[in-house]
Length: 264
Image 1 (cartoon, rainbow, N blue to C red):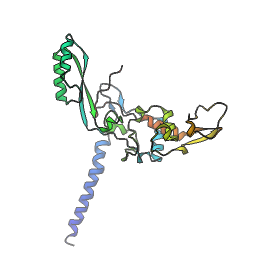
Image 2 (tube, helix red, strand yellow; image 1 turned 90 degrees about the vertical axis):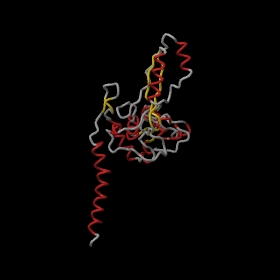
Image 3 (cartoon, rainbow, N blue to C red; image 1 turned 120 degrees about the horizontal axis):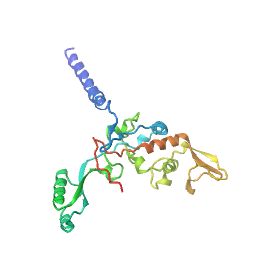
Image 4 (tube, rainbow, N blue to C red; image 1 turned 45 degrees about the horizontal axis):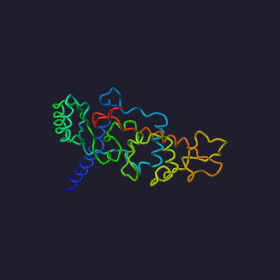
C-alpha cells in the first residue's frame, strides 16, 4: 500500500501528459486554422470544396485509398535561384561574370551576394525561392504540405504508406477527368506498371446504341466491354474523380513560400 499512491500518480501523470501532447496541443495549434492569403495576392487559400468533390472525399475514404496513397508532400529545405531579367548596358562584361558564377540552388546569403555582383555589373536580377526535397524532385508538389491544405477535409486523409504516389497535388499534375476515370476502371491501361487494383465496381455496363453514350469511357480494345456494351461511370466514380481534381496544393502561402514561375 505504501507504493500504491506513487504508482497511481505516475499513471495519471503519464496519461495526462499524453493527452496534453497528442490531443490538446494539436487542437490548440490547428483547431482554429482558417483560410489564409496567397502570397503577393488577395486570393484566399484553400478555396471551399463543393458539390461532387465534397462527396468524393467520402468515396475516397470508403474505398480505402489512404491505405496506399499519402496526401502530405515533404520538403527538406529551400534554395534560392538567381535569374537574370535584363542584360544591362554592358552585356559582354555581364556574360564574362556569369561564366564564373553559380546561379541555382544557393543559400539566401550566397544568392544575395551573386545578385549584388550582377547588379553592380549592370544586370537586372530576380531571386526566386525554390523548395527542395525528394518529393518535390518527383514532381509530387511545389511546396511542403501545411495545415491549411486540409481545412475542408473531414476526416483528413493523410495516409502513411506510399504503395502509390502522393496525391496532395494530383489535380494539378493530372487535370484530365477522363484519364482518372480510365485509371480507376483499368489502371494498367493508363499506367502500364500500375499496382493499383481495378475499381470496376464503380462502373457499370450498358447496352450501346448506334452511337456511343456521352458518358461512356473510351476504353482501349484490350480492356473493352463485351460486344454491344459500353462502360459508364457511376455517380460515385465521378464524385471520386471530382475530389481528386480538387487536390491542388499549389499556392505559395506564408508558412510554405516559393516563387511561382513567371507566366509566359
